Amino acid sequence: MVNITQKSSTLRIAIATATVSVSKPETIVAIQQRKVPKGDVYEFARAAGLLGVKKTSDLIPDCHPLPIEYTNISYEIEGLSLVITVEVHTIYKTGVEVEAMHGASITALTIYDMLKPIDKGVEISSIKLLKKSGGKTDLKHLKFSHLKAAVVVCSDSVSRGESEDSSGKHIIAQLEALGIDTLAYEIVKDEVETIRNKAVELCGYQHQLVIFTGGTGLSPRDVTPEAIAPLIDRPIDGIMETARRYGQERMPYAMLSRGIAGFAGNTLVLTFPGSKKGADEYLAALFPQILHLFDINKGQKH
Image 1 (cartoon, rainbow, N blue to C red):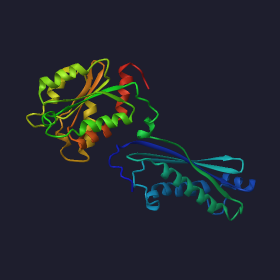
Image 2: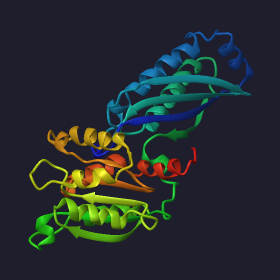
Image 3: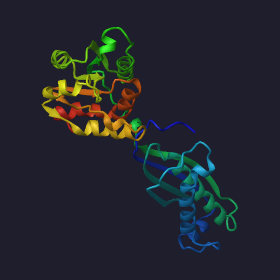
Image 4: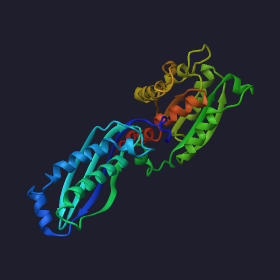
């Protein structure tokens, strides 16, 4: 199976359709009047479709088992065709489009089986995904090239040249993948005054986003939160709550991070862990959805 452990659970919705065509009007009448010998086509097929949705991962090898929060199966008659629509919802890390299409397929096959004794010309066609939503794919159309960033590595050892920076360069690469240019890349010591002065220098019209990586833990030299907190005039607690929750689901020490976030003027300031793994988890938890904040901060609504 594809690894989805890095993904976050969100509301995922998929709608799929399938078409069952018959060869004579009498078949449609029998369906509508519930006179098909094998029983009520609508209700039998709906029950089968519900099972199809729930059993998808049992039959399609690479599909993940997931919680099905809602399924609706509806029908519409168009001439000699019965159009099946299956809508599936989940709150999970991966989408439900295959579940919706599998449900539509099983519904259609059940209808075929029930109608074949009275109509030898029944056909199934056009099983397709009509719509899907949820997850980061919804945000892929958004453009962020107007945003400019700065990344600051807070580390005594890196500033002395005793170790290599990995988190800062990784953050820059991930921002670049979103179309965001990093105009400044700085390395500073773990000192309150030094970090604060660098934040004052970088927060302004040139940089809409400043990310500090390192110094958010509990060692005596971890002072990034103390340095940045006085500069934040609009704290956004939910950002770090989200990041810590994401990390805690993956390792037990994420709760020890003391990172803070908020606006210093019109610049969004984020404080990330100093490890590449920790920074990567924060990026996965927050981006690109966090960038919606810039529109909100300008008074724009979506």
